Image 1 (cartoon, one colour):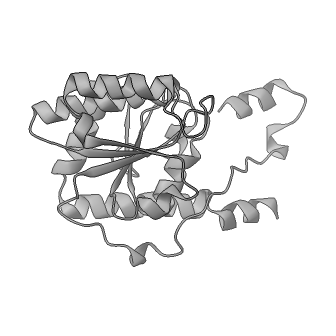
Image 2 (cartoon, rainbow, N blue to C red):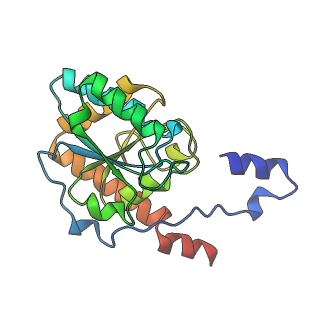
Length: 219
């Protein structure tokens, strides 16, 4: 939307412009993956360890869910880009302290940086990204291309591909209660509903954000 607005202010006619998003990798066939049910109580997040990505929101949401009887584990992939290699950053220490205070530290794993986080998230059914600032979050698109159930926030370009209860779940940024509500809905949803949403999400990626779709847009 921001790019379209800038084009509209310029001398370039909109009829002469084509929006081509970044292409991301995914699976060739959604049929290669069947959503496990009941869902394993593990969720994943792939993002730099910086405040705007919403790790605090996730930790607070996990604590809310624990109080409601839904005890989830979270695998967090990513590091602080300003931190020193091999050392725990100040921000990670802050997150670990928050998790301890809320009684969910034993449910959260800081996995650090890995070459291919998706190779480690193979059996994790749900991926979240509760960011407060985003453009077009490739992490969520990569998750959709790998048949994950995804939850994101209503900021940046996320709403262009993440349609609430159609291709995933979307909630207000900086709102642990809203994220907890989405996660609770995911884990209470019938198997057929989850399978339909997963399929719609994969089709959204394949038709609009896969490498092939973006290359076609250049031709």
